[in-house]
Image 1 (tube, rainbow, N blue to C red):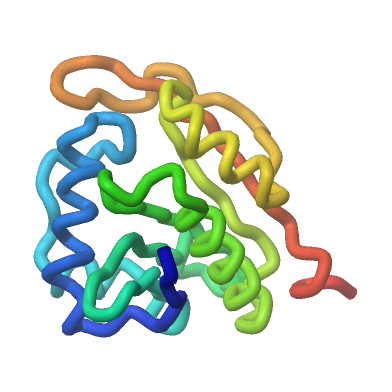
Image 2 (cartoon, one colour; image 1 turned 180 degrees about the vertical axis):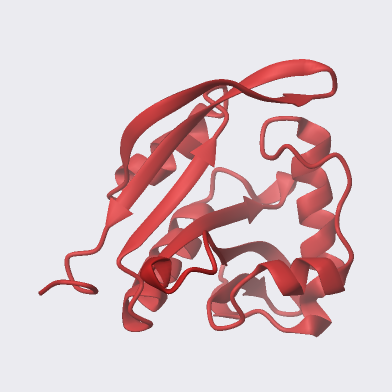
Length: 165
């Protein structure tokens, strides 16, 4: 399947949120139990680093960065989100999105990317590791999802381009 990686726009939100809702329903992608409004999602994500994989008018997946802190010292640190539609998984779309997100983040001066992934989501852990992330720890019973305590694996990727003195 042919697809292009391009900038996410507000017009993409209806398709982006459907993919996000699939991740929520699967129970292995996020602690969220319902999708946010566009306004809430927009406010929590960097506007300069939002991407979609697009085949014609269809959004197949999306990736975006969230700031980890409002403190200036952490301006070059961001958290990664990558979601691929349920029917599109296993086709390299996540790898393409994450690769493009990494490249874009480095152009913007982001020196560290981090991800918190449920350890049961081995496909996502593997995707991140193959993209240069390393496991730096595990947070045990960090939060509850649907009344069940869940762990997260913490991964990070330090740029060899941005933030190098």
